[in-house]
Figure: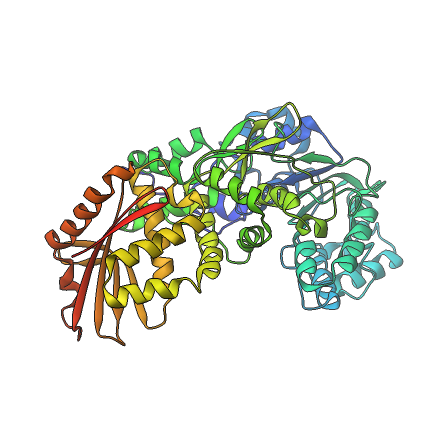
Length: 554
């Protein structure tokens, strides 16, 4: 019988997970390693959806005065009795997330920041009645709570008042510290936002006698010169560092146990293929968001086809930006990556955020930090060996680059559409081959026949969808199976069936295209058009090998 605990989809509150009968992969070892490594200001940079917010919630639950210590029963940290006696429930904690700090203008974003800090201040109503605070202190606190006091020293003052009340130093947790910077860059008030955050951090994180330590998380490491210039050497935990490398994301052992606990062990290989492949320090890591969503799908749906859970249109614009800025040498690098290879690049994060997007060389660093690429070790010359981590990210690359490719090929596709209208297989073949010569090699990437066929299939679907009047269906049930591509041209009352095959040798293209045509007939895919007012049905078997194809018409 499998595990009955619920999957914590989208829940980043540690208390909810521990009290709500949700499955939890134990990351409390972070507490011990963080204390043993010790830094007054600690910055963790990880890609989105890697469990940063949940870990910050876990830290708050552990350290905060008044915590429910039973939340940690049975977890690894509970075995560290001396550490728990010394630190658990012993500190006032300020915990905020800057993820929602945004706005059309700097003034809007600043107001959001005031609201976030004000809400945190209202978590401590007892301070207004504290005998250890004087009236001036209470007046400052009221301003923070209302959001109408000075913003730059608001966190500093809140930490000072908590320290004054408890007589205990404060732990400060700031999640998604760089989100306001990214949004400000996109909206055009970057300099103002950097200046504000520099002031806030300078007050609360430097020479603050009320602070025990601070932890910040984010996706990007923003240069010390632009943001952390007022701080004394913050401890950085990046994707390259071995310290604390296993606490964000799931290790292979943890994923194996998760699948075993739900009687899903038979899906280990496909889970690894799709969602593993990240290297943090020296540890191989899975994206936790993907794994949890994938397990929920396996448990609740008859569809056992992996999905791309990580994708986000806004974030994926990074790849599109890269594609448009790239030169021929970068295009070659993309071919190498898409074929499962690696490229050696210098990674540089000692620059301002806006400079990260100023050149293709800098974008390699962005792609790495954002999780689209991972490292496979460092070279003697200081460059890093980079690779696409897994099949899911490779699909994201393919989809984004396909859009770029289709725009480039848009004018040339008209001849391809005309050839389909006239049913001329030889001209269809010629035009697809022209497109393939302009494409990059991700169309032939992957290490299985299914992956290779899927890549070419994706290319053809994208090309077909570029024509007005064509209704394009992919992997649609038809006859006694699923046809690769079905096209309905209502303007001409025509139907087109395309079956795609991959040949590992160009000499096999003819045989593979014949096999594709025979499959269309054997599976009776043409039944799909029953009920449509179709005057003509065309059948095509198309086989690919590298940057060459063979097209046969039925």
